Length: 82
Image (tube, rainbow, N blue to C red):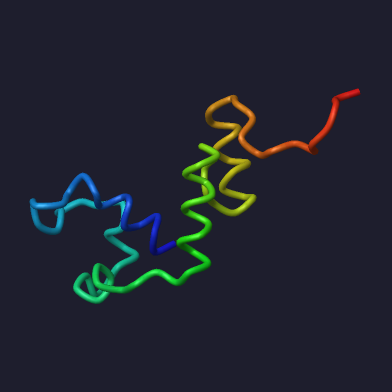
């Protein structure tokens, strides 16, 4: 959640805290939020998904995104399709 939220803010960097944000209801302490370090597992997941180009999120999020985009985002089983 934290990494996704930080990514959401990248458009606002240098302009202060936006009045209307995708995080408006999720962040109470902005100073703490922006200075919190990510754990190694989170950073590894971000790196992996950055290399594969696949979205990062839980299965529910990925299914919603698939439906909305009309595109397969969840990897299938490896091997030859029959």
